Image (cartoon, each protein chain N blue to C red):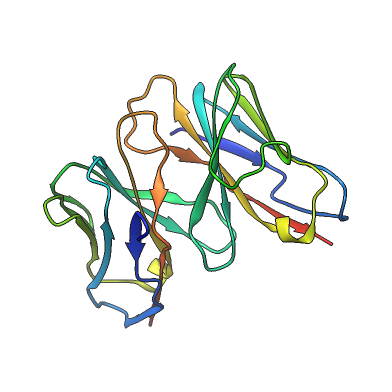
Length: 111
Length: 117
C-alpha cells in the first residue's frame, strides 16, 4: 500500500461546477497536509495548507482534513477554466521532513 | 514570497555525459533542500534530502554515486546526474525549507526537464 493514494482522474467538469478532490493516507504520523497545483512542465504551487484535522477556506478553495479517517479533501467552488491543472495532495510529519505526494488528479474545466 | 530559482529549465544531453541542475533560494536561507523526480503522469518521488554542510540522505533505490548532491551554502544546492542514460530522462524539481521556518509549505523550484538522447 502506498503512503498516499490519490485518484489520477482525469476529471472533467463544466465551468461553475463544484469540484471535489481527495486523498487517503496510511501514515498516522502525518500532521501537515497541503494541496498543490501544477501546470504542465512547471513546479508545484502551494494552494492550501492545513495542520491536523479541520477545515480551512481560502476564496473558492476549501481544504478538509479528517485524521481519524486518514482522508483529506479539496473543494473548488465555481470552478473556472483557469483551474484546469493537476492537483497534488502532499503531507508530512514533523518539521524538516520531506513532503510525500499523491499521484495528482488532472482536472479539466470546460467553458 | 519565497522564491527558489532552478536552472536550467530544460536540457538535452547525450548518453554518458553529466548534467548539473542548480537551485538557489533567492530571498531566504534554505537549511534543507529536497530533490524530487517526476515521470510523466506520475507523482513527485523524493530522491534525496540534503542539509547545508552535510551529506545528502538518499531514498531507497536512488544511486548516490549517480545523483550527486551538493548543498555547500544556505542558498545553493546542486544535483548532478552523472553518466546520464535515457532512463534518467525525467522532470527534476527541488524544494527548499526556510531556515526561519514560518511557512506552511516548502518552496519549489520551477523544475528541470532532462532529456537524455
